Length: 205
Ligand SMILES: [Fe+2]
Image 1 (cartoon, protein in one colour):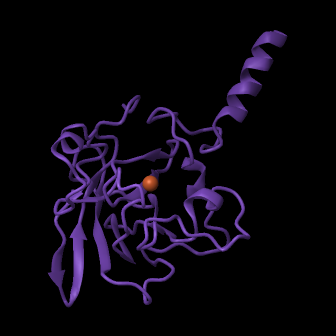
Image 2: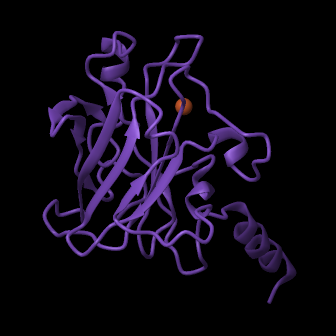
Image 3: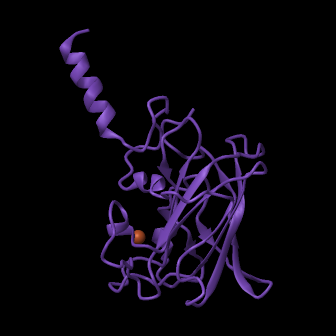
């Protein structure tokens, strides 16, 4: 094979770590998507509780179903990664973090959808950045079998005064809207968000 092609293949292989060789590249550039592989030895299930859940208010349950692009076939074995700031709007670290945890902090979690495509996180509502130039938000990345990891619209809160009309208008709606209306269920603020894989995701067939 031509050396030039070999070099190109090598560069391609190191340019995106959020994939295995067989994965189809989707979703465009994604800084930090590799963090979806940082769950370590943890055995993933469809439910996860994030660190500091017990210590913080208001507690938040995030739940929903993941569907294939047809919007009705449940998507099993989809890894979902979320991370967010603490109540002060800081991505809280302990100081010994490695990898993306240095930037995302330790308030993060991973699930893998079950046969029905269900997922649930228990966490708490984050604070806005101290600069107050962004609404409160929870970042989310997904990795489905056969495709590279991609980010979705962040979970944001419809009642957040920092969520301006302009920000709402500029949403990409990646896998559906991330603008949430929490409701009180069994004593806990709960948000329901179904995800449609590939919806508004570049390069997705
Ligand atoms: Fe953020």
